[in-house]
Image (tube, rainbow, N blue to C red; front, side):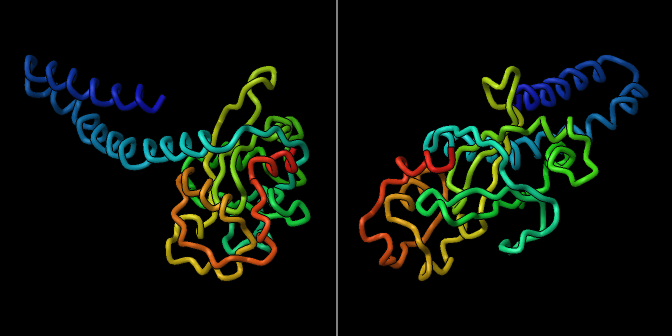
Length: 216
């Protein structure tokens, strides 16, 4: 849909330009709002939507979809999160006892999720639209969340979530409890991470692909 939107804005601009060159000058002023707004929309597509789509695809190449029921969620700041914002709480794939909040850091296209995560007074029918939650990724780094589609057979409304440290090469990794294999997988999914300091708990180098099933 991003490609269709981009082509639509560009094609519309060219078409109206052709019409305005063959009509009286006053017609140009009718089309002027579109002439000014269309380049802005093209800029948004190239600057925001397409990089997000590429990042989403990289994540999905590395992590399989999981369908998770009753995932904790909220609108108020999570006590373990550094940032304010709505969140989902997922299990650490290498340590299922640990729960990790993933916060919606990017505000674009959040309103749909905001209405359905909601609070105590939110219409249960809205909440049911994101139950069960489709999830692909590692909550320690980055992930894609989605609502169940028609008949719950495919995801829809996909949204990328990530930890700030996953995109910070200067992050302090001294205390990270994460295996080298999980770090490498996250890098392939688009995370920008420094080399970690080995943690004694990861000396056996568990395979994160097998640990994915702990979230199921």
